[in-house]
Image 1 (tube, one colour):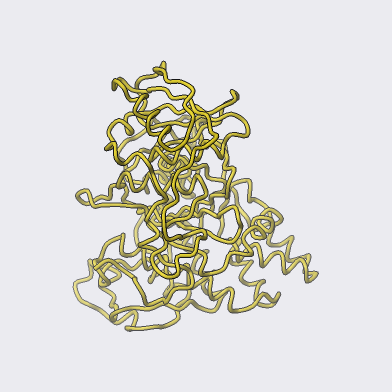
Image 2: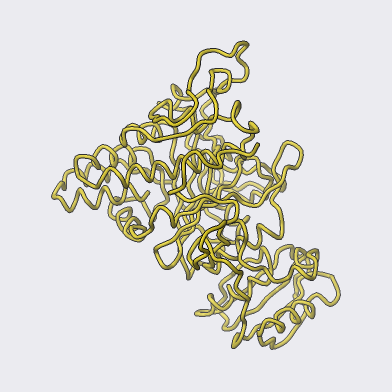
Length: 463
C-alpha cells in the first residue's frame, strides 16, 4: 500500500498525469454493504488496515497455484495498526486455522448468515462461495475478534503478488536447507528436483509465490512457522522498494502491477485516496514496523487464541499503546518499550454495570477501577445479563479516556454512545478471568516479533 501510494504521488509530481488516470482505472473495490451494523467505534488514535492474501484459483491465478475450483479463499491475513504519531506500526498476523466467531455476513443474494462459533478464521473469506471472496465478512470477523475498527481493507491475489515481486526485480529470501518439489507438494511420490537452494537468494514471480506458500520441509512444517517467513518476506519487499529509489521509471511498473492486484474498500478506491493514505505512512521507517502473531496455542489440528494475552494486545492497540520490545535499548516508541505503563485513571469518571448473573461482579470491577485512580460514580445491574464480552460505552469526546479504562478489561470492546460519560458493562469473560489479571498492561507480544529491517535469515520458523 505504501509502495502504491508513493508511486502514484511521485508519478503525478513528475507530470506523468496520464499514468495517474491509467492506474486509477486499475483499482477494484468491494461493496461496503456487507459490513456489520454493529461495529466498534471509530479509532480516535491511529488507524487499522486489514491486509488479506487471496488464493483464489479463478482467472489468471489458476496457472500459479494448485487446487481446484474458483471459490475465493484466504491463506494469509494481518491487521496493520499505524500509530497516531505516524512513525511506528505493528502488523498482527492471524493464522488461517484460528478458531473464531464468524458473525453474520452478507451473501450474494442479499441475505445474511447466522453467526458461527468455533469456525476457522479463513472460512470467513469463503462465505458466499464467490471467486472474489468475501472481504467484508473477513473484516466483520476481525472486528469481532479484536474490538478494533478496521479503517481499510486490502485484498491481494496470486497474480498480483507475483507481478509485484517481478516489478521490483526480485526479493531476497533465506532458507536453512535446500527445498525440493515434494516440499511444495507433499503428495509427490519422490523428492523431485531442487526448487530452492540453501542460503540467501532472490526470487520473483512464481518462485516468490512458491516461497511464501512453502510449508513443508522447513522448520516444524506448520502454518504458524510459515507466517514467520511471510513476515520476513514482507519486510524484505518493503526494504527493496525503499532501496531502489523513487524515480518515475522504477515506480510506473511497480504502481501498475500493484494497483492491478488490489481489491480495496471504497475508502481507498481511487488513486488520490491511495496517495492520501500513503502520505500518512511516509515517515514510518523499516525498523519501526514490527510483525507479531496473535497469541496462540494448538487446539488439536487447529489454533486457539490465548487469553488474557490476546486481549491485552488488542487493548494496547485500541489505546495506541506500544508493545513490549523484544530486546535492545528499550526506547519508548510504537512497537516497544521496556516497562509496562501503569493504567492511570486520575480524573476519569466511570459508571459500572454487571452484564452477567455473577453476584458482585460490578463491585469487583469498581474496586479495580478505583485502585487505578478512576472515580466510580455508581454500580448497577444491566438489563442484559447474558453478555459475554465487556463493553465500554463512551460519549462524544470521551473515547481516549474510555480506551484507558478498557485496558483494565482484556478483550473489552469500545462502543460510541450519544450519551455523555463512560460506562463499563462487564461480561462473562471478565467473570471468568483470575482477579489478579484484571489490569491488562501493554501486551508482551512484541517479545516474539521482528522488524522490517531485521536480518532475513533470523527467526524464520518454529522448530
